[in-house]
Image (cartoon, rainbow, N blue to C red):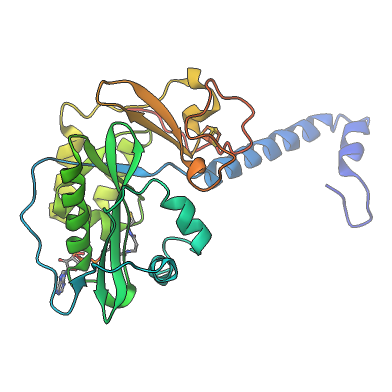
Length: 288
Ligand SMILES: CC(C)(COP(=O)(O)OP(=O)(O)OC[C@H]1O[C@@H](n2cnc3c(N)ncnc32)[C@H](O)[C@@H]1OP(=O)(O)O)[C@@H](O)C(=O)NCCC(=O)NCCS
Ligand code: SF4
């Protein structure tokens, strides 16, 4: 708010006897509105959630030239696969260790080519009510050959073998390749945040007609009531990093996803939460 001579314009307007204080109040109001609009625009939204719609899919053949690895894959090669497309953020062995701490033993599947992992997915035990299929990735040079489908189905088989829990996965609005794949396999939208219904509608607008119809018909299903958190849980209720999870007995837990990357955060925060250093408000939408 300083002009090029270093004069503070706030003082000029507010002290001027001609009543420019009104103009100053207007400017302040404009600045506040702009700041609020910028804050809103920069807020991210929590991941979309999809649930397995049931049954066991038929066995998936692994495409020619690839094989399911029975060998131990080195952490560096695994991090290399997750790094390869750049779409999953930067990976090193430390991040890999933290992110895979909840991987269920013997559920990580790799498809290899020439001895190197080119596709991977695993099953995670992040909450008592569900098995989460996570970190699905195919090396960019090997995409659109059926590896994504094969590796996700193999991980799904392992999740189905683990016992009766909801099988779900988390994804993002812009991952249209992944969303088409998950819909084709039989995963369907689950509403875990008040922004989800609107965002799924917008995803449907960008999908081919068959996939879009699957999304729309799931959103119309009678059981599709949003499962959101009440404001009484404090900051966690609209934090980007929260996941609402439910046990088989119907108890609801609040899980902090920051804990997967930073041990300073508790997996199950003490509620109500206030003054959390990691709080990032997510885009808020009205429920329908
Ligand atoms: C999403 C992802 C895993 C899909 O992997 P993929 O190996 O390309 O998946 P598939 O080959 O099974 O299917 C992709 C497409 O190729 C098609 N396809 C499969 N085999 C094919 C073949 N032999 N010839 C031509 N097309 C083929 C499929 O029909 C599908 O078509 P569609 O996109 O029009 O529906 C991959 O794009 C990826 O790793 N993305 C980055 C990481 C990411 O987003 N992960 C998900 C996080 S939630
Ligand atoms: S504990 Fe903090 S970072 Fe984690 S979900 Fe709650 S507010 Fe967000």
